[in-house]
Length: 604
Ligand code: GLU
Image (cartoon, rainbow, N blue to C red; front, side, top):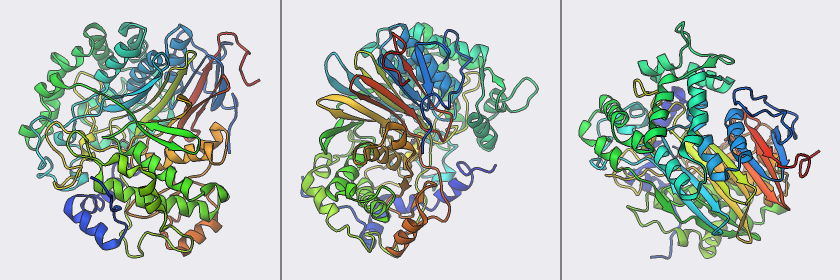
C-alpha cells in the first residue's frame, strides 16, 4: 500500500473530525478567528493528440468520422466528457443514435459502475444537474445516500473517529444511484431502460480492459476488501487484475439484468435489497441504527431547484444542499470578483492569496451553517448575498492571511468520485457527480452481486451537535460540485470534479480560469490550482511558482513542501454553436464529440 487514500490518509483524518464537528469545532473557530461570519438573518494536450483508443464498445471507435476523441475536442452535435474513455464512447454512441444528454448520462453512469468501480457505482449516490432545453429550466436529481430511518445523532457512538468507521455498516447509506438514474431517465430521457443499461451489462459479462487507475486502486485497497471484493477483482488464477487485463464481473451483470427487468425495484426490493441489507448488518456495530430493507424500499430521490448566483456577466448554477459544493464555489467566486482577482497575474502570489483567504472564510461558514436542509435551516440566500460576501472579502488584504498563525493545520477530507458532463444537439445538458465516497467505498462488496457499498455516512460529523450531525433519514453534507455556468438562461460551461473537500477548489478554479482569465476549456483545468479549507494548509499543483509559494509562506500561509494533485475536472463549453469538451489529463479521461455531418464544427 503506497497511496494514502486508505491507510495514511485515514490516519491523518483522525485529526480532522474532532476539530470539525459539533461544539468543539465551534469553540475552535471562535478561538482562532476564522469563524463563520455574523449573518444578519433570520499546459495542455490538444484535440486528438492524446486519444485513448476504445475497443471495448461495439459500434464505437474514435476512428469513425462522426466522433472526435481527445483531451480536448470540439463538435457541433454532442459532447461527452468523462474520466473513462469506454464510458465516454458508450455515451457518445447513445447521442449518435438519437438519445439526448440525459439518456447518454444514464448509460454512462451504468458503465462507470462496471469500469470504474473505485469512484462511483450503484452502491453509492450523487447529484445530477440537468438543463432541460424544452422547458429551459435546471433541475437537480438528488440521489444522495440517506442514513437509516432508525439512525440517531449517536450513530457513530461506538466508533469514535473517522478511520474507525469507514468499513462499518454505520457508514453505509441507503444507495441512491439506481433510483436517481431511473428517475432521470423517466423524467427527461427518451430511450428505454433496457437500451441504456445494456452496454454496462455487456461490459460486465464479456469484459473490458482494466486501466492503470483501476489496477492501482484494486492493488491499494485490498486491506479493506471483503472476500467477495477480492474474488471479483481477481482473475481465474486468483491474481488481482492488473492494467491491460480483461476483467469480467458476472455477478454485477446479473444485478444489472435484474434492474433491466424490474427497474429500480429490482435493486431496492427483493433479493438484491435483501443482500444489501444483510451485508450492511454484517458490518454494523449497532444493527438497530443501520440501513435495512425498509429503508431501501422507501428510498427516493428529491428533485431540487438549483442554487444560483450572479457572477460577472453570467450565472453560477449547481446542486443545492445537502451539497455545500456549489454554494461554497459561488461564495468564493463572488468574493474573488469583489476582490478583483483578475487584476493579478494567473500565477501570482496575490491571486493564490486571494483564493486561499476566500476559501478559509467560506469554508468556516460551511462548517458553521451547512447541512441537510430537510433538517437544518441553511441561510443560503444570506450567505450568497453581496452585502455578506463583501463583509467576508473586506478583511482580506495582501501581506497577511486571515488564517491565524496558531490555527490547526490539518488534512481535508479525502474521498473520490466521478464527474462527467454531457451536452446534446438540442441544448440539453447534464453535469453529474457520482460517488461511493472513498476510493472503493467501504471496500465491502455485496456477495454475489458484484458492486461495492458506499461509506458516505462518514461525511456526517461523527459527533452530535452541529448542522451536519447524523440523524434518522438524513443526508450527509457533501462537497460535490456539479455546476453549470449559464448565460442568458442557457448553459455555457459545465464543470465538476472528484476529490473530497478538494472538489470545491478544483471546480471553482476551473470556472475562474475560464471566465476571469479567459483560458481555453482544457487550459482552464490544467492551469495549476491550490487547495485549502478552514483548517489551513495549502496544497498546490505542480506549476505553482516557487516565488509565489515563498510569498504565501511569508504572508502566513502553511504551504506544503511538495506538489499534490488536486481533483480531476471534466468540462464542456457550449459557445457559438460549438461544443468543446475537455477531460483532465491527470487520469485517462477522454472527451468525445459527435457530429452528424463530420467535419462541420470539428476543430480541424
Ligand atoms: N463523499 C464526498 C462528498 O460527498 C464525495 C467523494 C469525494 O470526495 O469525491 O463530498
